[in-house]
Image (cartoon, rainbow, N blue to C red; front, side, top):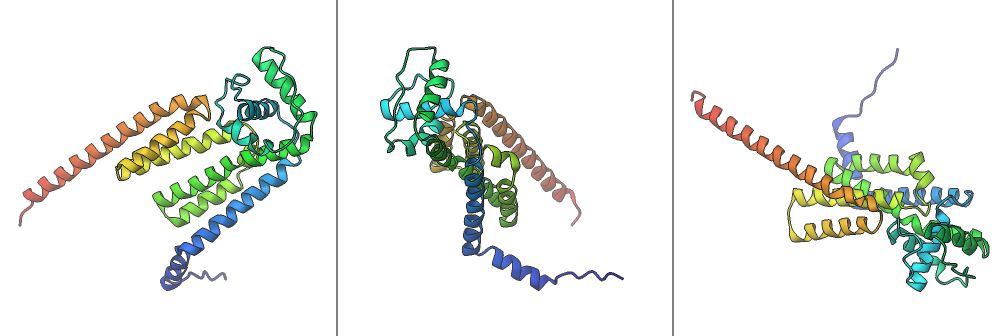
Amino acid sequence: MITQVRPDSATLATLQSSFNKPWVTITGVIILLLVLEGQLLYSVRQESLTWDEGDHIFAGYMSLKHHEFGLNPEHPPLVKMIAAIPLQGMHLREPQLQNRYFKTEAYLSGRDLIFQNDFETIIFRARMSASIFALMTALLAFLAAREMFGTGAGFLTLLLVVFEPNFLAHGALVTTDTGAACCLLASIYAFYRYVKSPSWGRVAVLGLAAGIFFITKHSAVLLPPMLILLAVTELLRRRQAGDENRLHQRCGWLAPS
């Protein structure tokens, strides 16, 4: 015979109270983010260079050091430049530009920059710098879920993100995908907070998040239609709520005293 033991309400209240303490929340978030960064650190040291990472690293390096933005114009510069920041202090032997087609130039010169120098250090530093977008995505997911559904939901969301295989596979690569996910989430979350409590400060944060998205990936052109659709949905929801309140008031007036 199996006896089911259920915690009493006092025990649950104590656990929930401890769980909601600020220092517990902060410590838990920091630990999970460190676990995420540790997994990314472990994995990227064992992965070879992907197809377009060389282009991005070289384009970011040249943009920062020589203000050259024509090598990889099909992608905005933010992620590439962030990834190239740790390379600026290295004394790298730079390949000579040969005025080739920009995709060919970025691809071949990127390989030359990486493999004519200490390629393991270059790739590792660039990937670790790019992993900041993965950490920010995880943190934003926690904050959004916590504000919408509570601290427990925030930790559950963060836990799922930290151990999500696709996120771990791409989180530290020098590509625009994780950066785009981070900025999209930041923009939608900022819009949610503005709708929840409109203010000039919150609309400024929304504009900043959207602007950063546009210098991260060109697919940010899809953001304005998304926000418009969300705004229309919110207006319809409020209108429906107003109609229901008026209906309840009328029913109250008609009810016998």
